[in-house]
Image 1 (spheres, rainbow, N blue to C red):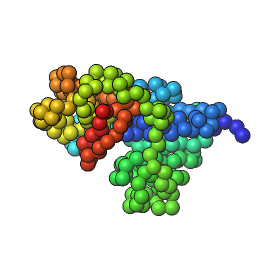
Image 2: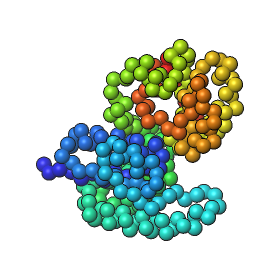
Image 3: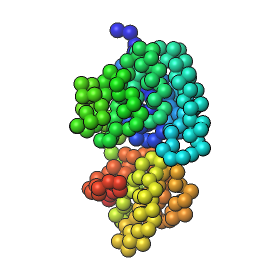
Amino acid sequence: MGSYKFLISGGGTGGHVFPAIAIGQELQRRYPDADFLFVGAKDKMEMEKVPQAGFNIQGLWISGFQRKLSWANLVFPFKLLSSLSKAKKIIRQFKPDVAIGTGGFASGPVLKMAAKTKVPFILQEQNSYAGVTNKLLAKSASVICVAYPHMERFFPADRLVLTGNPIRKDLLKPLPAQAEALEAFGLDTAKKTVLILGGSLGARRVNQLIEKELPFFEAQGVQLLWQCGKFYAEDYKKYSRESVQVMPFVDRMDLPMLRLTSLFPEPVPVLYLN
């Protein structure tokens, strides 16, 4: 059997990037002789995270369409045409056997051109409420892998496969020692630690709530590991101190996964380190 060529696209946020990496890692494990090429959006996090995972990536000049009046929307048609043209060139040169999209605006042009050039493609939807890009591409997809049941309200029912969400291999390794996790973040081993996540880019409402309630956390005698997101790092880094560690992004997510004891309702997941 000859080696396969997999074209994987998705990005803009960690919710799209990391599933794409996880899929690539698993395919690499099953098909060690396969060739892989990722396609993302220039200047987005995938351009850093994908090479760190050991894969090649090419970037498109593309961004999301703003749902409110914005000058950025005037440039969007030019970005889209540019990205469609480059995606077609990438497909022609790489000649993939299959394309895989995990959502986000970068996957749109890639999978659109895959369909036009008769390359079969698979969609992977992480959320219970489908993203715009995946919904637009669904009719042309060969298979749509979903994490939740009842997704036929968004996608053709005959193409749905309930797979759950892919997990990166580094999260499947034995967890590190608790002391290592606490030390890595400069945390006090004698205190309870609360991890606040609002997504890789940040969540404004979550950050506003934590900012408002910092005196409450201090009164409880707990310390915070606060992932505020890339978009909000400059606004909230001023709150960093011994009992509050403010970070744009937590790269080593295996460390905070130690002893998960409580999960509050969305959108404020809270995990305990000790």
